[in-house]
Amino acid sequence: MHRSSEPFLSENQIQDAVTRLAGEISERYRNRDNLVLVVVLKGGTVFASDLMRQIPLPLAVEYIRAKSYDGIDFLGDVLLPVLPEQPLRGKSVLVIEDILDTGRTTSAIMKTLSEHDPASLELCVLLDKPSRRVVPVDAQYIGITIEDRFVVGYGLDHDERFRNLPEIYTLEED
Ligand code: 5GP
Ligand code: MG
Image (tube, rainbow, N blue to C red; front, top):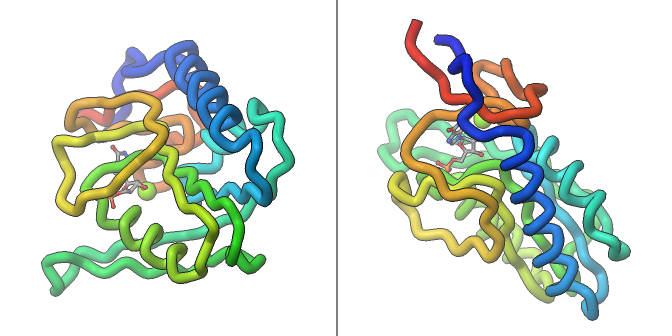
């Protein structure tokens, strides 16, 4: 497998989406206390680091890690080996995720975090592939909606490669 030679989404397209999302989030959370960004490892880190630098509000950053297993169980299992260090009770929690695909991982993350009794719980994704959805998930902030393609770059990997690319590419057969 290799990445497409031309970007699927340019650095400008990505940064425009990031700026728009940061504006929406800054507006929405302006008068609310205790904003905590919960970044989903590892793919969400590049997006989150650009996004948070455009949110001029007091906020805290936590990380969560989710691993899905498609194994024996058809629905798969989602394991959360990294969880936020600080209590989220009463906090305004905003989850930052790279891409929303089937919705399985993200819905498991949202369910786990809701059990921590936050004051509010919202989701921000850079990319959304609605045609792939299996489990319904509500994302309040969506960067760019794309068709069913496997994409890499800007945090998104294939076998841990390509996360460092500033643009997003599609993955192609050799
Ligand atoms: P979901 O649980 O919504 O199916 O999957 C979400 C996770 O699957 C994402 O956080 C990401 O790690 C991975 N994923 C889904 N689609 C893509 C894609 O097109 N490219 C890459 N690199 N990862 C993807
Ligand atoms: Mg991944």
